[in-house]
Image 1 (tube, protein in one colour):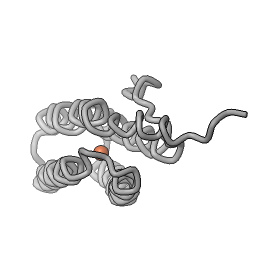
Image 2 (cartoon, rainbow, N blue to C red):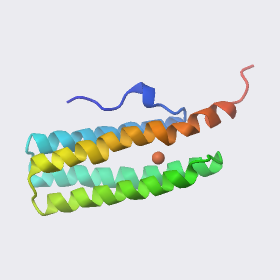
Image 3 (cartoon, helix red, strand yellow):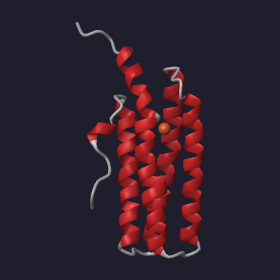
Image 4 (tube, rainbow, N blue to C red):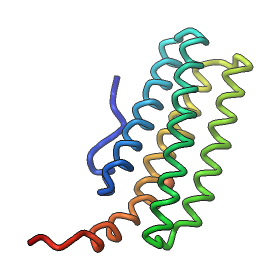
Length: 138
Ligand SMILES: [Fe+2]
């Protein structure tokens, strides 16, 4: 299964980077599950994991943005809300047994591609703030 995560997505806050990896890995699993026509039960258990990761991660990251007084903190919050909406849409498509191939396209574009783009455009703005606040090397 190809992995969407690459080290170039790192921001420098270890827990945040781990959460991003978990999220992307879980979305990769969802995509793979849809493409290989896994059972509804398996797909739903992946979605449940994903839901949990999303809730914990967004809350933590929004806290980091506030702590570092990141200028895109508000944009980040709004973007997270639209991600949750897209995920809700995908969950209801799966619930209604929509064609898995069509849903897989949505997962690729609206979850995976969206998230990578989001990390690069928004979350990455934390990186210079983290660097600037690092204790001096002795
Ligand atoms: Fe974010």
